[in-house]
Amino acid sequence: MNENKQVHHFMIHLKKIYAFLLVCALMPVIGSSQTAHTRRRMDFDVHEFKSKKIVLPSFQSGVKLSHIGGIVVVDARADTFPIGFMQKSVSNWNFGDADASDQYANKKPTFLLLQEGVEKETSKFVNNYFHFPGTDSLKVIMVLKKLWLTDELDIKNNSSKEKNLNDKLNRSIAKNEWSSGIIVSIDFYLKNQQDYYPLYHYDSIMNKALTVSENGPEYIQLALISSLAKLIRIDQNFTGLEGKRKLTWDEIKNYNEKRFDIPILRDSVPHAGVYMTYDEFKNNNPSITRFEIKKKKEIQDIYITGTDGKEYLERKMWGYCDGKSAYIRSVEFFFLLQRLNNAFYIYGGKRMFFSDTDTETNPATINSTTVPVPITTHTTNTNNYLFILEPLMLDWDKGSLY
Image 1 (spheres, rainbow, N blue to C red):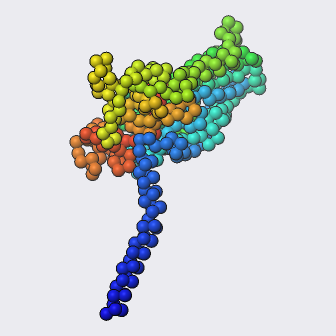
Image 2: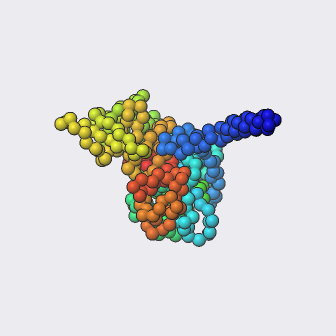
Image 3: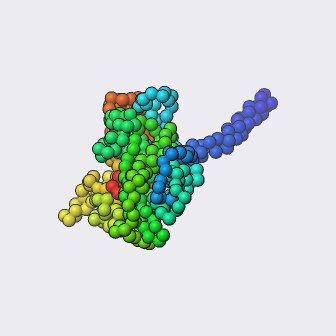
């Protein structure tokens, strides 16, 4: 009988040891699970974004220039490191028109990079595109203001010129098509010795029903080739430089640097308060300084104190600063603005979708097209509205996100 008790106690003790060892073994898994969950939050650190390198292949056009002897590319973008974001990916790709059911959110926020850097690869591309004459007295300077790949283009504001270009790409502008493509803005100057002459400014948005992950290099090619079309005409009809407006390189450099010489970038910290407009954010000058942040789960409500001393819920603001960090308002939420170089990024939402279905088991219905939404990883669901968490950049020209 005593032997049975000893065996029984021994078995209990053994089970305790086994349970302890099992917990120890699972601790790294539990820890990594918690970390993974944290990384899905809306304050995902931009420094932890993944990166993917793409290559810009050369393109021989056969175009011969008569007067221009070479092209120099200068990257004057807000952040000269990445070329864009990979926000969506494609599965089950069939070579016909893309169906929205093949559109998935990229599960990891990912920067796109050019293999050898933006300035070097774009310079190589444009110089391989032309055949230059033996003389190199005249050079063209391409100053990149924007060159950005994104799956979150706002195509409804495209100009007629851009829509014509889209027609050439055999696509119609339909509500349920992907808004993937490239935003491009380039200033062109002609250099003669130490003098610089403004040529033209190229500004466009180009999009197709192909994600950036599938068509990134082709979008960049299209943007660069389209921007060079006017340069070919200028070379063919070149009549000299006499009477043209002349600039120095310092003037051009200062002009580009002035775009980022603004208080929100110049000041060491953002000022606490509510930014009612985008200009207030740029000027780091919030018009409302008496406010309170009230949180309910993931939702933040901003209450401002009026002249009568009462608190009022404010929803028509651009963003706010808590004294340490600045936040932008989008899809009824506030997302942390994170700075890299002269650019601000968020990991957040841009478009809100309505769903009248069980969002835990069914996809959202958007414009009568079924789009799989990864609820458990990158989607926040509140009051039957959904948005997908993805990396986005602040557009300095408009104060919007792409």
